[in-house]
Length: 123
Image (cartoon, rainbow, N blue to C red; front, top):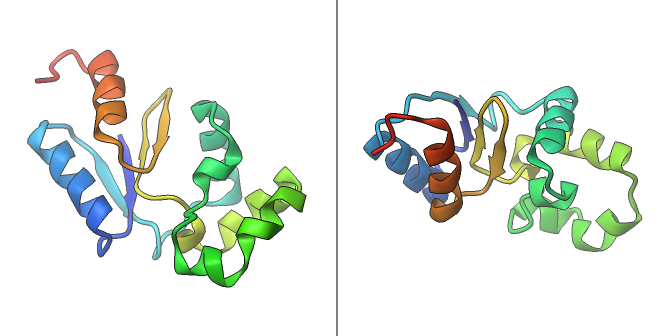
């Protein structure tokens, strides 16, 4: 699994700790240093089945500074993908990316549900 995070984010730290406590192997990627490409974002959005807005870090400083709350509804998906790809801090984190699922944000119950379905050795 790929764990895309911002190491200084406390929610990301909680998610990493949870993954480690569950004995789940993952590759970690710093979202600020190695931001997701537009192609990755498109693929992850498609796999997730979630609205594209769920991939925006709506509580982030960049989101607020750009006034995206008001701008997003008038933007096309193409424009939204392009914008997300410009700055990793605009992307909701952490992201847990599996072969057939993508989970933006850390909600422990949601992560447990997906992990249990996919890992036979889940605790």
